[in-house]
Amino acid sequence: MLAVLKAEGISMIHESGLFHKTRREIFRNVSLELDGGKTIGLMGDSGSGKTTLARIMAGLEKPATGRVLFRGKDIAFLRGKEQGDFQRSVQMVFQDPEGSLNPRKSIGRSIHEVLGLLKVPKREWLERTSDILQTVGLSEELLCRYPGQVSGGQNQRIALARVLLLEPKVMILDEPTSALDISVQAQVLSLLRELQKNRGLGYLLVSHQPEVMRNMAHEVFVLNNGCLVQSG
Amino acid sequence: MSQSLIQSQTQKVPLLNVSGLSVQFETQLGRVRAADDVSFVLFENETLALVGETGCGKSVVASAVMNLLPQNAAVNGNIEFEGRNLLDLGEEEMAKVRGAKIAIIFQNPSLSLNPVITIGDQIAEMLQVHGKAAGRSQSIEKAAGVLQRLGLGERGQLGMYPFQFSGGMNQRVMIASALVLSPKIIIADEPTKGLDSATAAGTVREMEKMKDLSGAALLLITHDPALVQRIADRVAVMYCGEILEIGPCPEVFHEPLHPYTRALLNCLPERGMHPIPGVSPSMTNPPKGCKFHPRCPKRRAKCSQSPFMKQIKANDTETKSNERWIKCWLY
Image (cartoon, rainbow over all chains, first blue to last red; front, side, top):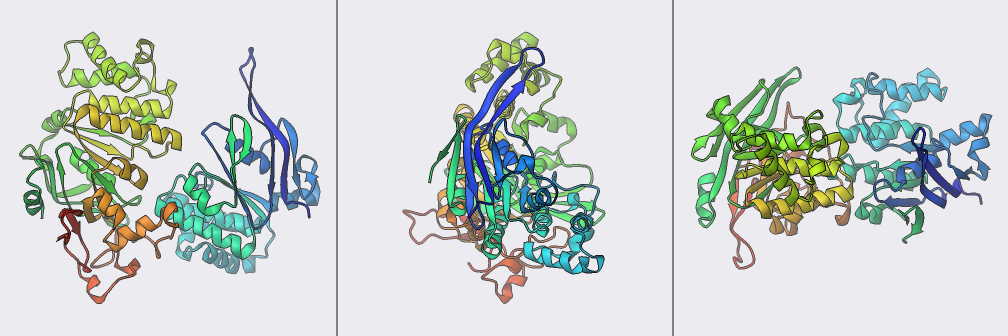
């Protein structure tokens, strides 16, 4: 069976300078396979390219060489229905929960925006919204508040709720809890574990905490000096 | 409580004595009780960690000690330092205490430094303002000396600006400016927040070095239990503006007594990441009685009344100390 998301020999080069171009290789020849029901952990020092690799996997950046395959097809050449399918199935959750929500939209509007894009009939909006809020463990009274008026952990759960509405197959989690307290981190990570069990989601989890990896990941890779090393 | 605490530890000299500190803010949503009857003693040469979740009032306690709270704060209680109540001091006198006797290292080092003044001048400014150096060149020389001990401070680096430094280097600059006047107390407010793991580990090493260099007492404010375990002597656990448990660091981590401390430590990835049930209470309308009781697995009818701080006597005084204080009806 084809993997949902697969990276084949990708490398990334960073170019800087206007007249004297300097090229710096961030990583080379990296291959990864991401499937439902499994968590792949990605670790590395700061600046080792973890986030860049995650963004390439999510289709937000283009690799210098190599390709990313979604169900066997290169994501660079996806068009029409297949492209829409990829964009729904592969979702990314970012490090800074407040930065990933529009500060001038109430939380209710942020969630309704996704329902509008999914062309869900308006009469189902209320029901779908309360369902998804229950899934992520938030109360409905938050709907009329703005991202600045709720806590970091609540914002991260709202970001998760928006992503979950799209019913993704794999999620790319870029340090989803590094900006949060340990108590909130435990809430968010155990919610992610539960969702994986119930919905068979696959995760690419980027984190620098070894203890988190031990608890969450089935397989851990480390980016070291531009190479991807499997560490168990 | 503080009096008896002092007596139980006659060998230690109390430096800062906070008793019955409460801080309230009037806001549009109502009155926020950011700190509620907070009492603790900071002894000479010790590191006391104030631990708790975001928004539990840790930083408010630090700002109250430094007299840096905004105008709309209503502060009550006593903060005794060198025989004076810091809350009674005027701005002019307080300015002499700040930096010279009690220094603070704020979170987010890159934002706490002035972006248009060089590193050397920023540290030297402390010496000039407090009249500890004759002129600019002498103060810069002293600043270079402190920076050198922290592994910075080559001639060229003194003329650099904060944006030319990394987060970890800026943190060292902050530590240097706290150390330069050899204060008696250093308050570190979330020194590792927002730093990646490698830089955070480096900062912890710098903090350890700072403790050795200065001999000052350290009030460490953090939500990072790993940092606490590494450098703190005693730990005070805060929840919703109150201190619920104080005790020697290894004992609290090894055998937490308060149900909240236990729940908080169970959130750690190495202890299985069990989230605390329920949600954090609102600070404007906190639960009556023990503030943790709606979420507490061991709650009883009595928990709707406010508990008071109690000393826990150890049965086995060889392995345990008599320095544990708990605010819970279970004990």
